[in-house]
Image (cartoon, rainbow, N blue to C red; front, side, top):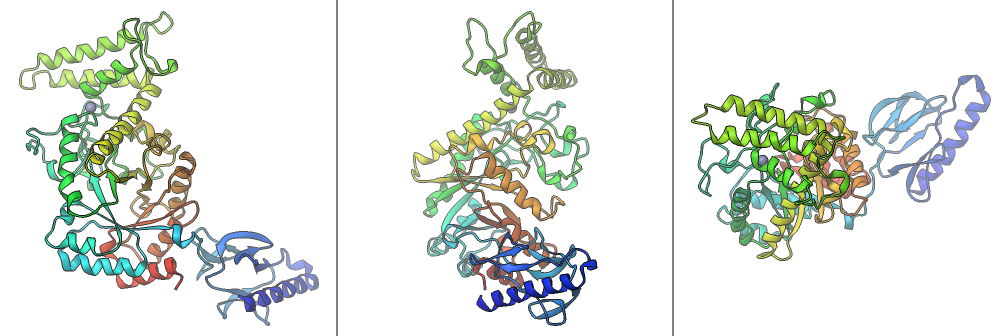
Length: 501
Ligand SMILES: [Zn+2]
């Protein structure tokens, strides 16, 4: 690094000299130095990048050179910066050169290979070797992958921690409408505020790629127990470190939300009979039923609120009657209209309590599931696949729609992985860092936040940019989704960035 330091001291003199000769040239060029801490400094201000990428310097001809290659920019008057993608920028124009990478101490960084496709033992062995080469420290996969012949041995011999993807309120096994699931009936589908099932196809502008998404009511206890039992065979096949909870939330098709999505277009669930009744039971406050929730959240009767609780209970009971009197769908339209009425009432009068209830429901489900699992696998850790919204996106939809309260959840989880698919969600790569930073802030840094990025599709450069942004502080690492789809070029990129090759 010494030779660069000399270079930079030289740069400083050159720029100073140029500026003092021609003061009319405007703003002096940026002074680029490397601090004794190994970080890039721009005009004396420390950047967040360790100087391990391309070196920028001023040639004797007064032009900027990157890695010894002359640029078209004269140093005098040119502004140098490092973009959020980690590249050198001259006068705001991106160069193809990386300034360096954010530095997470290698021993603390969590690098996860998350699999989607299912393959046989040889297929898995090959990908385990990629993972070993890259220094991956967690393998994450679906239960049916683990149970393929010979795969458990490959995984057990990999020397890498194993985490099981545990899809809850959506899973591939029982999503066909009308199909009887392994627990003897169809799941109880969630109900949205428009009175329709919590399926993406019922959304007003349903997303074509979301036609698969059908959400189960988060209070369907038999369904939860069935899911727990269906995950156990895979957990028994190998020594698993953790459970990675997927679809552990309320209905939202976040993959189809963009920066311009209208928050009011996001449907709120679950307004089924059981959920609404449970909400009333917990929050409703009468002399006979003193509610356990904080006083500010209690639903009670008073003159000032025009007997809020009675009005709410009357609506609930009216729908119960309609359901009881229904003969083969004769009351379907009336039930739907009553559901809309209940949802409108809740959103207008009880929105804060409803949001808290939704978040508590998800949190309690996590607690229940982990307790059940740990009765057989006592040391099992946990992660959650987080909806990639900041706290304020879409008027706080991460809590009010998705029911994911990371402050609450972080008290019992070991890790959070936001599904920051920047290209899928049509976001710039620095959005990955924004989401990560927001969640770290919400959880107060109690547990690691490890963003998930897309390994497939688009260009190698896009992948590289996503990876760099995923590793920026305060991230604790990266999850690479569809790890199996990494091309040799992307394995090389990953190796270079992670292992500084
Ligand atoms: Zn429900």
